[in-house]
Length: 478
Image (tube, rainbow, N blue to C red; front, side, top):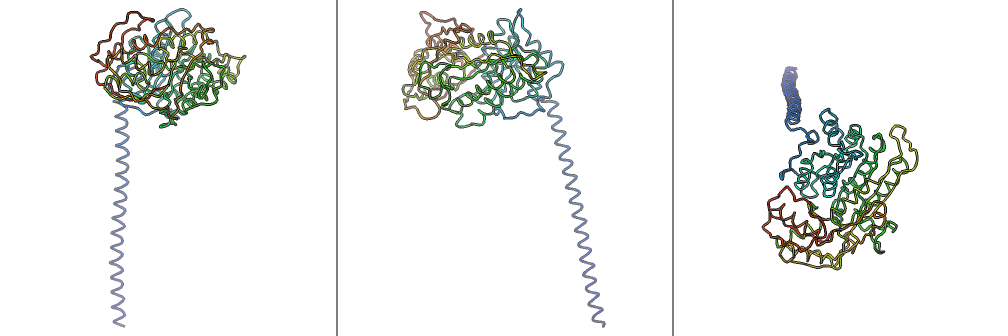
């Protein structure tokens, strides 16, 4: 019996000791858990405080829409997302914002247009905006300044527009709420929709960006114009000569087949033309598509062949040429005249955002805007060599299956008939204007011989320089 009692005593003592240890562990665990919760809450509060302070001192680019200074240190931005955040657009719509937008959109001439230009920081968009503003039309621009090529070049164009009183919003065409606010603030008569993901070969690397911009973005613009604009504006938008794809009939006519695209880029533009038909049919939107043919000139796109070849020639870098490639090079001033002509003759939309019905059929048009004179890419390089005073290190290869086509050749008879489109700038004259700008912008020590005669008026000298080297290597671009 005593031994049993002693054994029980030892067990009770061990049990009590174990219970005490367990209670200490539990208490310690609760303390650690409570500490973890407190730490988590403190971290969340600190994060929210930092976000608040950041938003207070560094507001979104959207809320700083009117900071139009050019800067080479602009951080690169990603390509357009399929669906933009609506919270960003919520910063729009204030009294000051509306005042600035309406001021920029107000025409200065009787009967002037009020035009929303998407892609206004781009090559064609900036030139068109300048031309419209110069003749007294109201212009509001929109661009997301993505990093497909150097955003500093786009900011430079934006600065030119700012000097002339054109507001260019730093925003995305897929931001539906933003577009609604714009159409609520201003009764735009026209939309010149030039925002797009450009480039034939880049589509093989980033296909989703083409769908996001060229398809979803186009739908976003059509949706806003059809359902939130009162009255509905007429829309002129950028299609592309790439829609002709594998077509072998020349010169390319709007009546030719376009169901054999050679690249995803071309396919998205062809899809855009089909989408335009649907919105014209259902909502009565007046829609005009313009098929551009290899546009070039000052303030152009660095990914285009003439631009990248010029940079490579200056830097002594090799350039790659596709054998027998020919392009219908079209100077920017001629293209701008075509865009303005299309706007002036667009015709009214017949739909109503209020009723959702149309009163009758609305214009649905498509036009080629080209130079009508295909030139061998090797000839273009020879002109650049002469202007830059330096021979190119050329490498000629067979054309790969990367979306490029052997030649382009525009028939512009429809555009000539409907709004007097007649290109007048030769490739020699156009490239001289480009090289003049190129040398000035990059601050290059190159003397360009003056021509004996000129076949076109030289555009105003660029007001922005870009110091630094210009190096690149690229194949011919369509």
